[in-house]
Length: 242
Ligand code: ZN
Image (cartoon, rainbow, N blue to C red):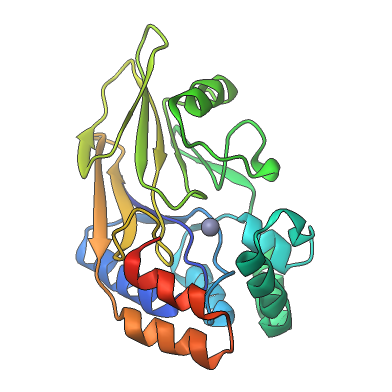
């Protein structure tokens, strides 16, 4: 089965539409969203509606949870916090209900899926280093899992002897006997210095992973952020992918 896996749209409708248009060019049988439909960007309602309409699996992120008022954004930095407060006001009752139906984790064949970390999906831990990944491999049984959250594409591989390595790739074929944690990057706010929207496709039969980068109209997204009265820094970072 060919699956598209995407994460962290962050209310960036221009990026999200470009990614969905790109996905229709691939032969995809299942589309998975790993969370953070909202936060930072100016189009939370349209993004929640589109994700819910297009994706077969929809998971919740930390910004979604904070926007629903399920947790306070006290751990968020100033920019994230102000955009969450803005998002709480902006979300319609319908979209709140839709978002509240997004799950915390899921399984697809023998792939594990969650927004942040397998150990405790609700704690929103980051998996950034080999040490982080080595710990997290202990907390799921499947050979492959996909996460988002850091907005930084990465493949962590655990060999049969338990040794974990970290790679940034555009394509990889997964081996039997090894295990993988894949960070799919971010649609709406990439942070790896490449401003193009990022998502992956994975073929569960051939075990081929592919990263896709999609250029979109960044200046349009920036204008929308300015018009919404959100902090200018949230628009500026989109141009540099940070
Ligand atoms: Zn995020």
